[in-house]
Image (cartoon, rainbow, N blue to C red; front, top):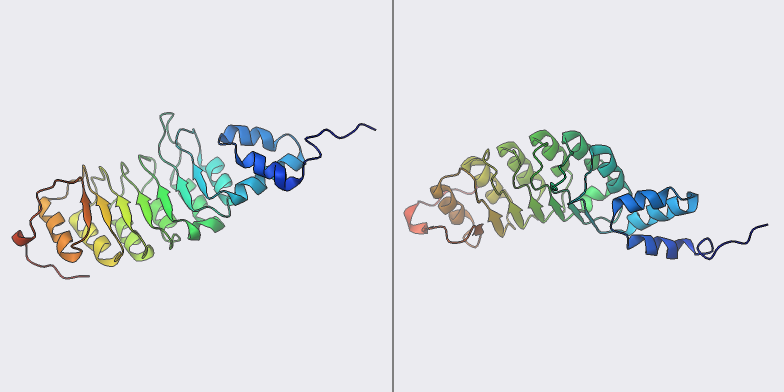
Length: 227
């Protein structure tokens, strides 16, 4: 009978801790295929991760959702577009929305994901009640997504709408009015008129509107009602 190797004698918790240090999802997938024990250790390692970043990875809907489903303790999720091209679609966001960890997420980045629409964003956002930071810059979302964010994310502190050229002043007013904890909003590259930003400050004077340096003067616009 062959003697067990030193690696085979490692306790499951220690093996999972070692695998937790692996940042490459390709390497994790390969480790998962070594044996049943390693597969279970990979799942255990994912279950304790609080941060997942797919930036720089070529991921599709199924592989991304599968990893998120196993990350029960997840707090921060980054699915930003990478130089290799992002293959995540509305279907992927829907699958992710079904993961148990979604209600505990405090930060989500969907930056540059041109393959998603309001449909997928709304499906995901409506379950992220703990969200504090959201980056949807470089996407094609509209006021429909902003309305869902306003209704579902009462703890939102910052949002990046960089180059979201399909959002309007109406959507921004709803967002700023309902998200009472909002501290920062990045509107660089949007097509919203300057007067809108002045109006947002009448609703939330302490709001930081980026990019900084916009010529905003509260005295040039009448006070607007809070929705």
